[in-house]
Image 1: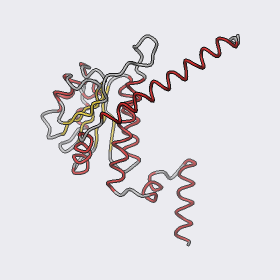
Image 2: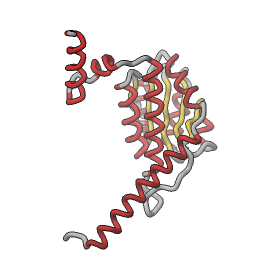
Image 3: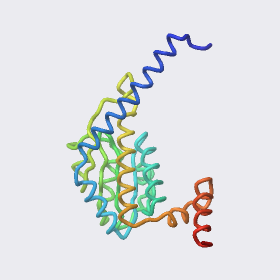
Amino acid sequence: MWATADSRMVMLERAKAIIRQEAAALESLSNRLDESICMLAASILSSTGMVVVCGIGKSRLVGEKISASLASTGTRSITLDPVDALHGDLGRVRAGDVILALSNSGETAELLQFIRAVRHLRVIVAAITGRACSSLAHAADVVLDIGLTPEACALGLAPTTSTTAMGAMGDALALILQERRGFTRQDFARLHPSGSLGRELNASRRSDVAG
């Protein structure tokens, strides 16, 4: 059954309010950003390994996108489920890797256990968290603090504003790394041989070569 005109208007206004709330959280994040992201970028650029992104629940899903963005813009990266890591997949981590751990609360038990387990290797641990005084933050070498902001969910529970902030922080990291590496359109085309974007970039590359 279609909603009434009044209920549609209420839903529309609520949707707009949610987006405004998330936009405000991103503006706040840009203002609180400090040189920690520069320190992390420098560590990744000088690393001999890859960026291993990990998290639990919604943070893991955001981490998968961050890892994919890193990989497609010139920074080698994988995702690793902390639970799987504690049951054998810890062997995927090597000395020289950078661990990027995501947790809004910074108190996710499985993630903290994973960080403790990986410390026997020569790795750098970075955290994206909403609590700069959390257990995860204390365990990390570099902390990217997204701050604690109310979730857009009416119950204040579903990860919404926090995951938006995490994703934006990941985008910022991936793109400053891309620029520092001198990653070009040609490099991007090489990593995107298919799909509409790949076809467009490779057609442009062939045209440049022919010209």
